[in-house]
Length: 182
Image (cartoon, rainbow, N blue to C red; front, side):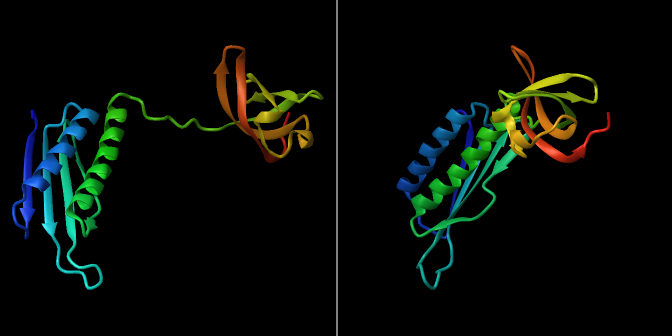
């Protein structure tokens, strides 16, 4: 293993099976992110729970360049292996988000554009003009509210602007009440 791994078992006897399970999960983390610097795993036997018996809890702290990723909530279970699995699953999801962010693959939410309907055609499409004078094509399927048949020329709308091979297009068109000023 190329990363620094620390395993701490608290209030429980040392167990090769638990340590082997942790190492297996760490290897899976390394597949998700190849630049993990260190991983600290703490497993402890919590106080007896009056309904469930003895509970085990697991906490994981992973260091990567520029960040530290940890399981943020207590992962408790009667079975120590389930507690470990749940904690590693939570860290793996956060680690995958970190990797996507580092690669610039996080989804960028576009802000809606405001405009007004300038042309409507009976076959179910039309055009919207934004404040800059750009015109966007839209069709019946892109209208969210009101129905396409209730739209009127001059109606103020909000939409998501996209550039397609055919030109500018409006997606998720919604009326915002009233008629736009000419």
